[in-house]
Picture 1 (cartoon, rainbow, N blue to C red):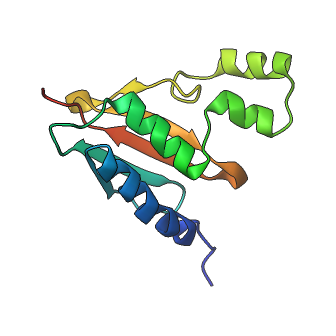
Picture 2: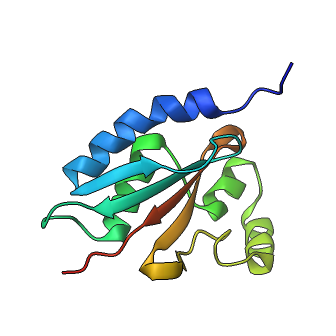
Length: 126
C-alpha cells in the first residue's frame, strides 16, 4: 500500500482558490504532482487583473495560510526564537517573494499540518 498524500485536501482547496483568482482577474492552474505541496501558477487573464501581491494576500486569506514567521509562531516559538530561525532562512522560506524565469513571482503559503502552497504568478504586461 502506498503512503497517503495531501492530494485530496489540495483538490478540495482548488475550486475556491480558482473562484478567488477569477474575481481578481487571474486564471489559476495546478502544475506538479500534488504529493508534497500544491504547486499553482496564476496568469493574468483580464485587463482588470490586480497586482500579484493582492492576489497572493487574497489566496492566503481564503485558505488560512500564513508566512513562515507566522507558521513558527503557530507552532509555539516565542519571538526571539522566531527571529533566530528567520535570520538563518533563505528569503523564500521567510515568505519573501522570489523572482523566477520569465518574471514569475513565487511565494510559499504555509498552512497547518505541514501543508504548503507554492504559488507562482506571471507578470502583467500592461
